[in-house]
Image (cartoon, rainbow, N blue to C red; front, side, top):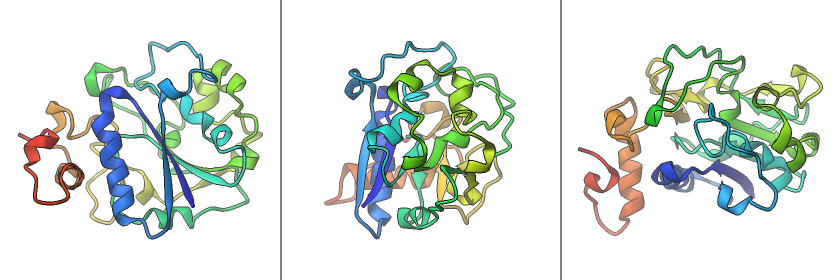
Length: 233
């Protein structure tokens, strides 16, 4: 069973479901998809919202190993993504030498805001935590107490590990930054990190047609749906 945790924010509900659709459509192995939604975490997560965080799951994502009972492996993904490949291919990259595996972007944002006018924060290891392949037994420091109280940089810069040697690199194809990196036809996962087609101002962004097609299939599986149901013009 491939365990997948997806960050959930009510403002991006449609994005969450379309990502889930894209995972299910192409998965060649059984998957279990869990939304990391604050409404379900109130007993263990009571961290006050930071004015710099752009989504509800900015910090709660690091509860993934705890929610997996610190056993086996799990995948975390932001919801503003679309899978273009079989998730089993990412799952097959698990490497016991590491506690976590990520795409190691060298991303220095030029913009100061992103979707819905939310702040765009610059820091080392930017976007590394948007797709994480967790070796849960090696991430036991990520208890609810720690995640509730650690600083944002401690979490997102993986300072909960004893060193960067425990962070493995995933191929770039597993976290392609739309609007930041040049278009590439040979990618497995696209990340609408600045804004996705479900927002009016980004409805014609790169890879928007692929997202709208997936949304259409999610809304209606019995017959072709009108893309207007998914926010297209």
